[in-house]
Image (tube, helix red, strand yellow):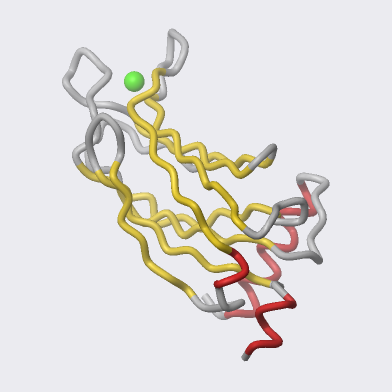
Length: 150
Ligand SMILES: [Ca+2]
């Protein structure tokens, strides 16, 4: 995917949600998770991830029957109303067909936006409580203050 098509995709995505698509935003490339808790009687889960910052939240695709889901999905969250330090919350959920989805685990990360460089991707491995890890790559885009530092 070229940078250009990614920008178009992001802009359409935020626009579709009625969100501001010109201000700063965070791209979370959700790569994969491993060793997450099982929630289903088959010993597996059907995981998806809710990612939120403040009042903004996005949901990943659901991977069926896996404790080591590979998502390979880019998700976008507006940083328009976020202070310099953003707390990013991750909720790993188990999708259920006939009942309420279950929480498999949580993780969070504090991102000091004032210290990030716009457009530069940084990989993170996060520990999920009570178990497992989640692999993400974070990129802050359109952060004018930081672009100037380049
Ligand atoms: Ca399930």
